[in-house]
Length: 288
Ligand SMILES: C[S@@+](CC[C@H](N)C(=O)[O-])C[C@H]1O[C@@H](n2cnc3c(N)ncnc32)[C@H](O)[C@@H]1O
Ligand SMILES: [Zn+2]
Image (cartoon, rainbow, N blue to C red; front, side, top):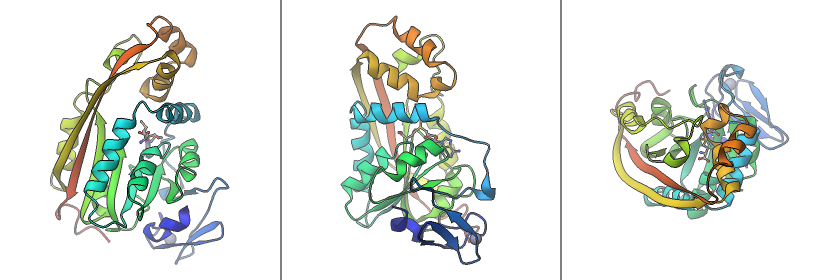
């Protein structure tokens, strides 16, 4: 619920702290934001963004696929990495690009005194995030703009297959805070992404991640999650429909392509979960 995390949020216009009164979020200077009937609040800096995030269909496919349990080992690795680095049991966690909110929910289940902010730029996503866990508050915001979160207020920032803004993650984390990043390796779903028309992951992501974080974070730990899964046709349809290929192919085109494959179809799941500790340095002086 928003009320659980309101003290961690900041006004996107002036940076002041926020209060929640009934269905309105307000700052000291009188900027106000209506809470949507689905329970999230839009805190977009400047009121707009060029990004729309994942579509309702992609978010629904992702929710169904995650509920079917195929990615549970990833969810466990993220929850364990978070619990292992939570010096303070009352952890304050932001998931950027939270999608369905299911990774954040797994983390909150592992840490019963923790609370979480699920941030996404997609409206269908924040609607789901708002009901994903009782200790999660959902906000609509753009990960590439200044985050509507108070400086040095958090113990963890999570990014699971999602954008990450190194400077802003550094600003919102308290000293010693942890940035947890789950990224696909070049092997991830390789059997699927090598099919004509499907989009592959960028295999230089890990390298780029290290250079973006260097100076602000030190790598603390790394877990490789790698396994094969025999996906029945419906699960294969969901995984194809929730990923980047969904932006490039219609559902009919995907169904035609998948119909040519064996049922079940075996895919490789390969994801790296890294934890980075915030270090004092770049950005420290610019944090208000
Ligand atoms: C691949 S999905 C991952 C969702 C979730 N973390 C998961 O693994 O199930 C990426 C998410 O990032 C969101 N997203 C994309 N661009 C964004 C931006 N600029 N700001 C915030 N969220 C963004 C999308 O809407 C989507 O929900
Ligand atoms: Zn304000």
